[in-house]
Amino acid sequence: MGKKKRRIPRFEPLEASLIDTHCHLLSESFGKEVGAAVERLREGGVERVVNIGAGYGLDGNREVLRLHRTYPFLHPTIGVHPHDAHILIDQPDAIDVLREMAETHPIVAFGEIGLDYYYENAPIDVQKEALRLQLSLALRLGVPLVIHTRDANEDTLDILDRASIWELGVVFHCFSGDWRFAQACLERGAHLSLSGIVTFPRAEALHEVAMKMPLERMLVETDSPFLAPVPYRGRRNEPSYLHATVRRIAALREVAPEVIARETSDNARRFFHLPT
Image (tube, rainbow, N blue to C red; front, side, top):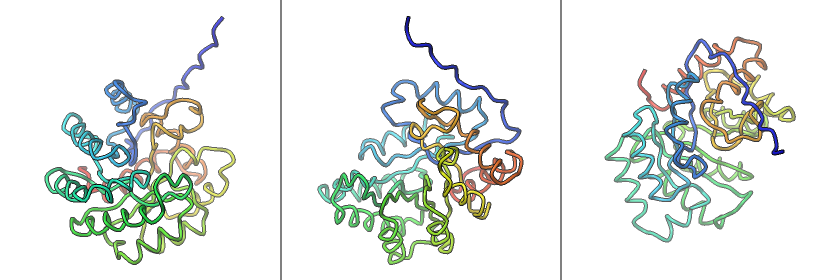
C-alpha cells in the first residue's frame, strides 16, 4: 500500500483580510498551478499579495509584471537577488532595463535585494556592488526596498546607511534575527516582516522579536513556496497559509488574530502604497 497522504488542516477564515507582503509565485514549484493558488488565497481571506520578481533573472522581472496585468491584486516588485548579482556586473545594460521597467509599470518596491553570505552564490564584492547599484536606482525612482540579508547583517546595515535610503521605506523580509538586530533595524525606521518561521517551536529569538517589536512596524509574509508554517510543515507554502503565521503572532502577543491581521494589512498598504 502507498503512503497515506496527510490531510490539510482546515481553519475558519479570520474576520479580517490579510496581505501577504512577500511571495514567489514565479517559483517553478507552482508551475501551471498559479491560478489555483490564487483562487485558494482569495478563499483564505488574502486580499493582496506582493509578488517578488527578483530571483528569476531579468525575464522573471518581466513575468511578474505580466502576472500583475492578469491579477491586479498581485503587486509586483523587481530587482536582482544577491544570488544573481553577477547579472548587474556582466550585463552593463541590466540596470537600465530595470529602470525602464520601473518607469513604465506600477511596481511597489525594489526587491528582494541585499546580501547573502550563507550561500555566497555570487562573490561578496559582486553582491555589494549589485546592491549599491540598485539602491542608487531606487533613490532616483523613490520606491521602497525589500531587503534580504543572511549572515551579512553588519555589511547590509553599513551599505544601507552609506546610501542614505531609510526614508524611502525599508523592510527586512523574512526577518529571522534576534532582538538586538531587530532594534538596530527599528532604530533606523525599518519595518520587519515575519514569516512562517515564527510558528516554529524552537524559534525563541524570533518569538521575542514578535512580542517586543512595535506593531506599527510589523508586516507578515509567507515567502512561499518556502518556509511553510506549522501546521503545514512539509508542504509547499502558499499565500493561503498566511493565517497560521498571523494566529501564532497573535498568541505570542495575547491579542485576537484579527488585531494582527488588521494592523499588518494597514501597515502594508502604507508601506507599499497599495489601494485601500
